[in-house]
Length: 138
Image 1 (cartoon, rainbow, N blue to C red):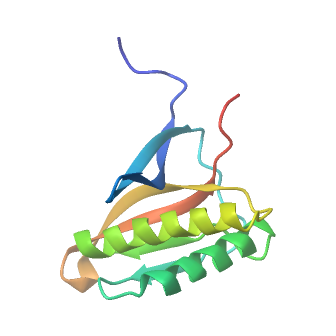
Image 2: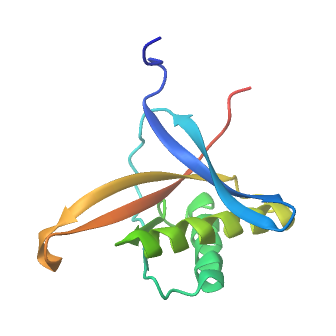
């Protein structure tokens, strides 16, 4: 069939799913348009495997709310390795649930992944998850 030319970039919206006692994470892939450069300085939250998920959830909500009110640019989560990336995605899903439950006026976000090889720390790969607004097509 080919590639849809309207898809420029993709992000994903993490959310929880449940069946009986089983709980798991789903990542809904969404199409995004062209990237827009932030005029304001962005915040990067560093995530380790031992990062407390509820503290990170709170930090995500705070930084996302500040971003949407123009205090600073789009926040990102930075993680190295599978466990820290999993913590970042789960905390983001909890943050989206909290934003929905509190009926926050902040728009919902999606995570836009990217990776960067950092030579200064032993040629390690850092995964960045940038938070961006997503307005689904009608």
